[in-house]
Length: 134
Image (cartoon, rainbow, N blue to C red):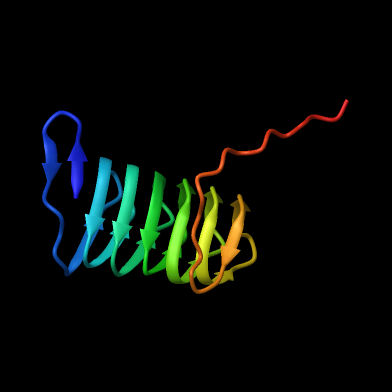
């Protein structure tokens, strides 16, 4: 369900395919029961009961939860993918990842923790402070 601070909740999609095209910006909580393709910008949270594809032009500042996901763009937030996560060579993930299985192409960038298994779950964890060497 979309949730806009000013107008309240917006309806969820009930299946089919949802596309957020390049040049489109979405803010709030996005929930879908169908496949989702994102080529634009999303800030908030993204959740789908099916597959998620994040294109090369996508910029996501959100926690993401999907059954399966293919990422080619940029994600700043935690990823929870129940089954298979595929990170393409152009992907950049800055956040923790929890997934059943993962495929990482050469060139993909990951900055965060990775947890794998059938019941993988990302905990709310404060990032550790990186100490600079003197």
